Amino acid sequence: MVFDIGRVLFKWQLRFLFEKIIDDEAELDWFLANVVTEEWHFEHDAGATMAQMLPARIAQFPDQALRIAAYAARFNETAPAPVDGTHELVRRLYDAGVPLFCLTNFGDEFFQQFRREHTIFDLFEDIVVSGEEKEVKPEPRIYEITEERTGRSGASLFFTDDNPANVTAAKARGWDAQLFTDAASLEAQLKVAGFLQ
Image (cartoon, rainbow, N blue to C red; front, top):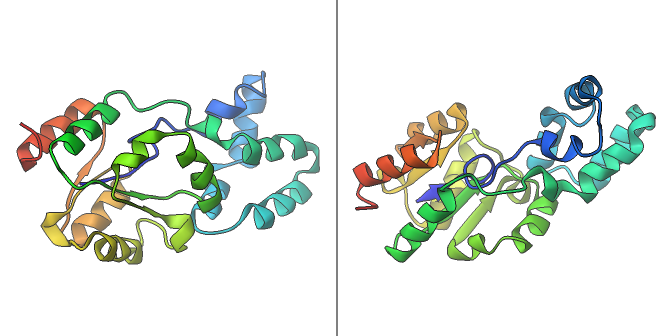
């Protein structure tokens, strides 16, 4: 069983952090659309370091320097809580003896600090992190790495992810890949697949 992390195991939005910092809704929308964007954040997922990313962004938006610094210092606040019901499913799968793995687009530096705060990751045999591998979903290589690390391939891997492109890429390798919408739907999919009663 292979889980994505953001928006599957944990609620994730850059807005969760910056709505604490920027009171004006229009200014917040502008900031997330232009300064600390998901597209820029994805560079860290792909392997760029904070040392590479922050100075360049601050040079581009010098009046936003403190907020950009907050992105690095307070990143864990962008994922403040579990997605409802998914941690319970993880524990049920673990108790049932199902081998558990994660495949995530996540910056290496951010994941190291995030993992320390969440014991749920102790239940997983291995976690494939894009920032560490410098390969991202939905590119084929990170799925190949996951196959190598799990010792499994094709339909022996059940994968859930909230991004349709990532699911499509997994299906292209023969995985049993399902789009994540909520825990109840995932539970039903796991029962069909025979993982849960």
